[in-house]
Structures are given as structure tokens and as C-alpha cells.
Length: 92
Image (cartoon, rainbow, N blue to C red; front, top):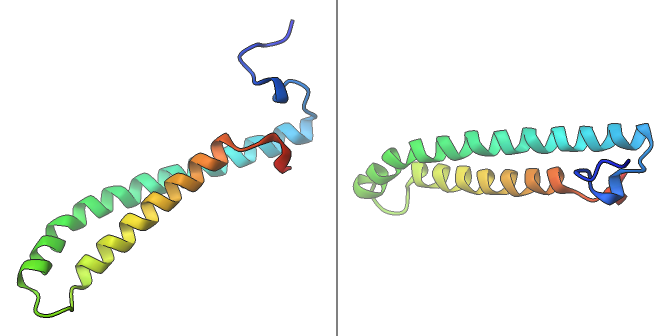
């Protein structure tokens, strides 16, 4: 009897396809973990960002720029990692 917890497309895969799927999902998990680390670091940077925006003169606010870049990297890694984890069977 077929395992119904596995999606229908993945029930008749070859061993090479299963290995490629596992590698893609492992890489997706790696990107999700990196996203969490960047998000944690972006939250820590908020203290320095507020101080930089309050006391920094003019338009020179490097901590703000670092925080924005860190947040963008966290979101993009999270989205790409989630996309890799879900993926499609036709990407081998």
C-alpha cells in the first residue's frame, strides 16, 4: 500500500531523484537557519540603530544601513529557503 503522507508526485521517484530532492531540502533548511541568524542579528542591531538615528548628524547613519541590509538579507534568505524546501518535483 502506498504511503499517503508522501505527496503523489514523490511516490514514484527514482533513487537519484530522491537524493536530489533531499539535497535541495537540506539546502533550503540551511537558508532558513541563516535567515533566522540574520534576523536575530538585525534585532540586536536595533539598539545601535536607534542611537545612531538619534545622535548621528546628517545623512550618515551606518548602523541604520547595516540594519536595513541585514533585515533584507534575512527576509530574502527566508523566502528562498522556504521556496527550496517546498520546491517542485520538476526541478531536477
